[in-house]
Amino acid sequence: MSGIHDHTLTGAQRAELDLAMRKAEQLCRAEFSVFIGTSDGDPHDFATSLHNSLVAPSRSILIMVDPAERAIEVVTGGHVRRSLGDHQADLAVASMAASFAEGDVVGGLRRGIQQLAEAARPENTLHSGS
Amino acid sequence: MFAGPASAEPAEGWPATEPVDGLNALLLLGGIPLLLFVVIAVLTYLPAMVRGESIAPGSQGVEDQWLGGPRTSGELAAPDGETSAAGGASGRW
Image 1 (cartoon, rainbow over the protein chains, first blue to last red):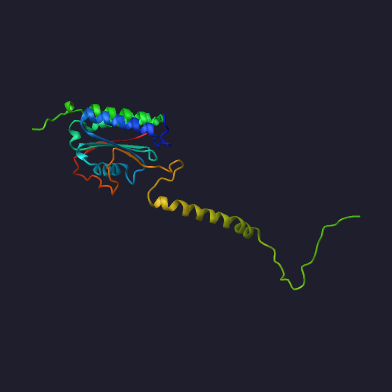
Image 2 (image 1 turned 45 degrees about the vertical axis):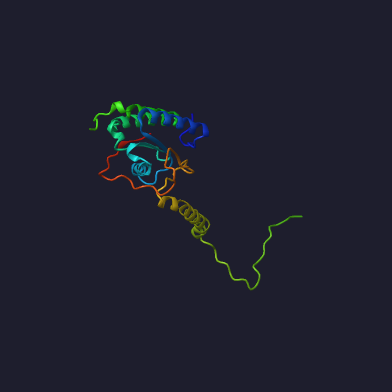
């Protein structure tokens, strides 16, 4: 378990999160990205800036964690949003917040990624495109 | 044999000393160090406050880590506007 304030990831923790992200990407066919650091200005605006800087924002899910502001932001691209609704993203944020409050950053992120991937699976698509 | 306290008159030609007011002495000995303390604190924290960074204890030294980020590190894109199709959620703990 790692504290939220000494959040610098070790090599093993990075590998653990990388593995969780790869599994999630295989499950839901969306790209995952995790940013841990200081948000420049408003956390939501900063998170959308990060998301828009990704290679394929429409098909990407970004999780931003700002330990100093104790803020979590999940940004889902327009394509991903067809299957992963804002309510499901909100549930994942609540789950991660509970883990972070206990100081479990990596565990919280791993579970949050898994939860988002489960919700974003293609069979959960509400509106099939024609 | 007794040792009495030493005393001497000011040397001839020295200016006559006037008694120092207690309030002036307090302002001089306490006010100037306090003023220096405030000036140094402002100079230390002002740049971070101007940049909008948190100056709360324990919030320093945050190093950004981005897993699955863009391959090239350049300028960030603009944030979403009102017409964005993106969604998501926000929270704090």
